[in-house]
Image 1 (cartoon, rainbow, N blue to C red):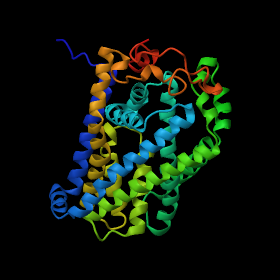
Image 2 (cartoon, rainbow, N blue to C red):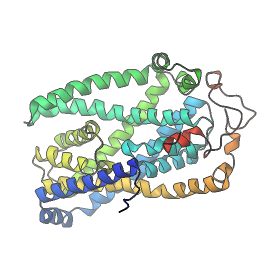
Image 3 (cartoon, helix red, strand yellow):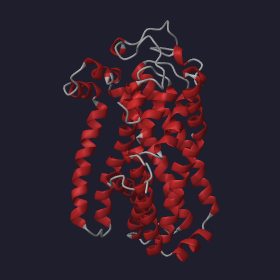
Image 4 (cartoon, rainbow, N blue to C red):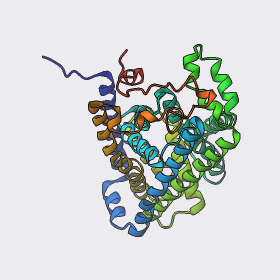
Length: 368
């Protein structure tokens, strides 16, 4: 009997989907489906609407950070809308890939810069900036939360506090000292070609990364405020200060938990039930709020990015310029007459790169 010819990546994705379903079903059984439905039926619609309306603010801030990072790193003039399209495309592709790896490929393809590898590393830098806020605030809130609330498994959380503190210092140092980061990484990259991929770090300085971190913090506060508003939609009696700390700890728990389920589904919900339960918030309310956060901040942006995914597929069939009429104009500046920065001279070639022919794409597919 012939078996299904699933690739290892497909088997992994299928396993994560099944595991996410199992975890969700287990949480629903613990919380009780009747209580979940009852909490949903009595929710405050105005609070839900307010939480959902913060999604555009969240996306604009995320794109503003990405847009400014690209411009500061490459001295390339790009349109805000093009950066936004690459961001939404990344959201759509990341939902189907482990640890959101899809956006490392999707964003560079849509953005159209010649050095796809370097753009992919910039995407990773963007994620490090975002995660720095999660780790720093999560560590601080974990310390304060344990001072006011009796948290079970205290020794475990003490270990995570130490790990979070160490990571906070390391991540802040990496971001605020980009020149030192470049020199440190260059020691491990043996070829000039590999060092070209991180040359953009030489374009950054402490002032620039401070601005980028400020945007990330602003987005973090919008996201956590949105989560807390959705909590209030189901549990208006939730304490504000401890409630905000619980939101930060849910995000921190999601960070320290390995991505073993599809889009971390079940991890966020389980952490919400746990931490909000410690401050007397009903488990059904915490579960419903976390599901709404998942739908609002993950599923909706992924759906918004689908047209860009289809546009990318059209590009593969019709050539690189079918998606970006001016893609071959973007080299080191807005047009070919502009010279790239000396630090990036080895990174941006004078010939446009066909997105479907590059080794970047072949590697992303697992080809050699």
